[in-house]
Length: 291
Length: 315
Image (cartoon, rainbow over all chains, first blue to last red; front, side, top):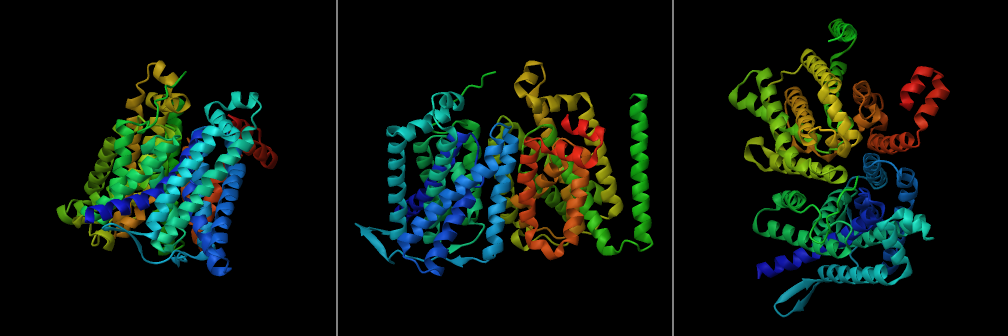
């Protein structure tokens, strides 16, 4: 029984990681950069929901929409302000800037809300869904469903629509895409918007499952989601989802059967292992370096 | 050594002696009180950290976020050796540094095959793993902190350590090995084609960098006398990185100055201490964008109107 409960726990956290990992993967695919600030965008998403729902007293639905839109805008603005000027420079410069943006967001929220944890509003009904002998909390169910729905929608969007085609083109070859009449800037903005919007959902799920939020929540969540993206093969949306679920499971099993203190170390161990054995990830393709 | 180099060496040596003499005089005569002399000790430790990270990030061009991890290895091992083995200070310092270097080597061999973003994340991961280990094994006393470390570090020791670190790294950078390291930063594929054993040099630079981080950790442990794993987290690594970036990647003088300024300035800005990390963040972003847009030379030319500076900056 404990075994199944652990699996459900793991899949629920994993769903959250997957949503965040998809954002990492999309941005990496198109901008070829790791958006270190992505974790902080999740944190912002959680805080926007808190402000709109608890402080302004709006309905939960409005709060969620506001949080998604707010994060999408934030993602686009960070891209325009911080990353766009560096689009043609080396990876070191972009990486340092991304770390800077991440720190900036974290500290702005630290100044506004303080470092103490805030209680996140719980707008889901209490209690659990019973499926045979198993009981699943509403948060876990929501997290899993949302992850699946978002992944499917995103895959349809990317593979079937014109904008999705533009995205694929830009991620393959920016210059050629531009010559074909694709607006590269808008496509990149759109990618950041979608990725950050998904991050906002991840943030809300985080808030609902842990019910406490603080300005530091994004850092560790972001790193774990990144590991999930690498595990699945960075740049691949299906991979990010599978990676997220696997990381969630690994963490849940470590917490239940080994020790909660080592769960972070195990997740990082997975990253190191995968980077050494198959750096392209589970679904990734090895890209040869051309000179 | 050429004549010019010998002259430069003697000049730097004399300069270091003069600075040391002046500070010691000021300390003994009470111009610098014990509070500020404490800050100077921390500044020197930061100089060691920043210059050693500069070797890996600035000269080798591999962004690592695990410097605090190596520092913690040096700190804990040297402290444990002082407490339990009763080794003299210098020996425990060296034991700590060697262990940090060994950890650097173990981490470096597999990870340095990776580049850029991946390397950054994996070093961050190692940093966290080291921290989790320090937090959970019995001998380090976990989150409560390792106590009872003898207070051995004083200004003389840290100053000498800083000078030695700077000297060694400057020598490496100027040597044949240093040119190989810099060539890897410029173009790894090209330098490999030119016959430079890139893996060897990457690991070499990384290990030396870890060694000095270990020294800094040992100095820190014997100065603060209590070690808490939380000190050596991701934020510490970023702080060291900010020093290196602010001073200029691949610029030793810059690292030294930035490390000293970034230790002393917060003391003056106590009232704004909440905004310190915010400022670091803005500095990181601004430094990168200004540099990439090549605005720094223009600004320099405008304000300083010095031909040399502009030429140096545009290089």
